[in-house]
Each structure stands twice: as structure tokens, then as C-alpha cells.
Image (cartoon, rainbow, N blue to C red; front, top):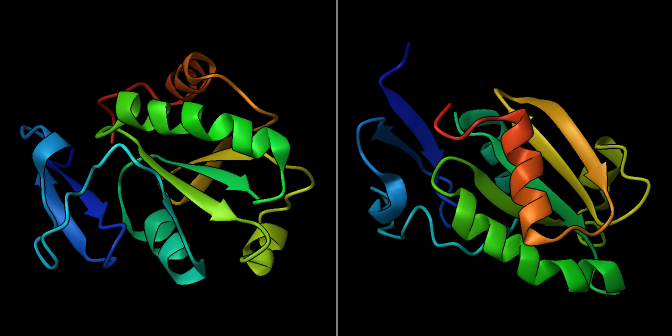
Length: 149
């Protein structure tokens, strides 16, 4: 069993080694100095999305959304609150399906908002439709118990 987590910085995409014994809440990127966990899900472009999914060891929850989507806008505060509740055990990111149409097509997105949970570089769960903070947190924890990387 590994004694560290690999955490990909959402700003510079550097891979950071974080000991399991350390609470990652205050951890900073070794390359750019940005906090690794801010409680604010970052919107990813294609390259940063692939790096988050493919290189980190944390579960990654992706909110696929679009600026014109009413339910997406309604769910945004709940998703941000879920980030504060789930980090540093889970990485939460956003993917604008209008800006990243190729990634959305690759993921088979048919409706938004859609949340996809990845762990160990593969999709483990998916749900569509707006959810509350409690629903998001409970859904994630039902698929990946916190504290497992």
C-alpha cells in the first residue's frame, strides 16, 4: 500500500506527493505555491482535465456543465460546498461542455449537469441532474469512502 497521495495542482498541473499522514487541507504545490485544495472547483481545459484524471491518485469528481444551463447554475453553489466537504480526500473539478466539446463527446455526455466520478484513471460512477450539497457528498461517499486514495 502506498504511503502517499499524488495530487495534481489545478493551476500548473504539477504532480505533488502528499504523505497520507499529512492533512492536505493546507498543502501547497511544490512548483507554483498555490494551495492544492481551495474548496473551489476549477474549470479545466482538455489537457488539465486529462492530467487530473490520469496522473493523480485521488478520486476525481467532474461536474460537466455549460454557462447557458439553468440547472447547472443552480447546482454550482452546492458543488462548491461539496468541494469544501470532500477535499482533501476527493478532487472536484468542472468541465465546460461548450468549451471542451471533444472531451464531452469522449465522455458520452448526453445531458447536463452530469457528474462523473473517476478513481484510478477509470470512471466508477455517473449521475445526471442537479443535486444538493448533501446529495452530492453522500453520492460520492457511497462510491469512494473518504480516506481512500
